[in-house]
Image 1 (tube, one colour):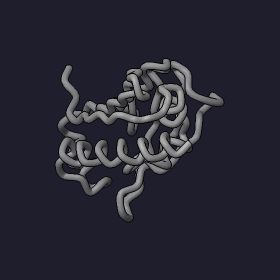
Image 2 (cartoon, helix red, strand yellow):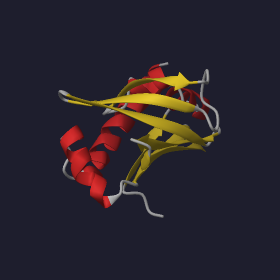
Image 3 (cartoon, helix red, strand yellow):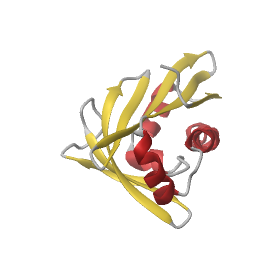
Image 4 (cartoon, one colour):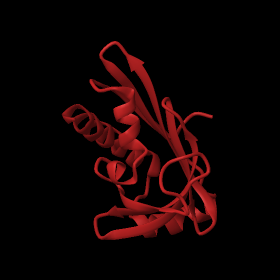
Length: 151
């Protein structure tokens, strides 16, 4: 299934460094556009099946989500996001080694039921989620590159 938004960036840092950033809730909140933090629920860190409570922010709007990690390897970190018990999105970071570091691809799939879209527009202020997520991914990847290369 084709992602609703995706982009990639080359990073002059080790794949492990990038994985450590995107799989750490604090590290991810430091680079992500809307995700502003979270805490593990019954887990101490990233692993397949681990759940976390995330807090997202856009301007004055704030909304919580719950996510479950579906992939957690050196090549991919991914999680399914739920809101009010429903699957609403999937986020994925693919990390491929390159000669000078790695290439990171961030992708997302919108899984909201159509009846739920107007509710999320009110909650988030985002009318076109695919366009907004594309811009968010590009900003997030630029900050991820900067953070990873700074280390």
